[in-house]
Length: 365
Image (cartoon, rainbow, N blue to C red; front, side):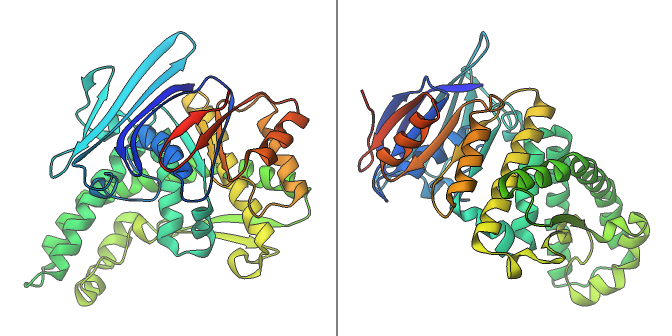
């Protein structure tokens, strides 16, 4: 699956941009702050209707404008698709697929899968449990519509339960049990789906890390959940007194975490910068492999600031993976073309180069 054309109007620092892509590898280069990452984020946005950086719609509109519009043309085999996402200030966002307005965001997610590797990925390791849950939830939602629907329903009920517990009146046990009865089914679906997905994902991630590091490090990834150790129905209802006392939910998949270790020690404390960076690339490559397998199409791979903080060996290994034939369309950003050009030409990889200057993008001839 390839994106063949991208058009932007009033998106971030772009007034108007219209660019065609026809290569497997596409290098977006320019000075820092010129808008390279915004191009990559627009491609990500078309796949999941969300900025990679979590910005709300009103912050995506260019200064002094009242709307933005992102438009993408996609091609897979003989099939062509056209997606438009547009938003006008103080109104609801519209998503149109082949001129037909989609009723819900869920109808878009998973159609044009994407994997984006960016410097902010460091928060998956260094941040709190929420950052790790968000990471796993994002690619699971792309791969499994049932998971997406269950997560949206569960989070809606969780917000309601949280508001109930923080309200002016203390809820009684029967009210709490009523909420739990609705949440337990979704929690079970989510928990079981995560465990099933991880049985594929974890071996792929560890294999990718072993390839990148030449098998030098003992890395492990573990899923931590209270729901793994107890009957979910019993766990939810046994926690009711504590939740009423604490005035907040204390049980559920929103408390899950993922443990990353190196030689049985926490990776975020004992891993070097290079080890952490390599592990994050391994996670993203495993994500790509998982989406490719379960969606039966090649996701777009996006690498923001790809060449930063990687030693020559890890860089060479990653480029060999990109050139192996198992990847589809790749977008990467760099501050200078010469470095990227030399690296790809040495490996015989055909690429297109696009220069970004202060909110404009042009293809090199």
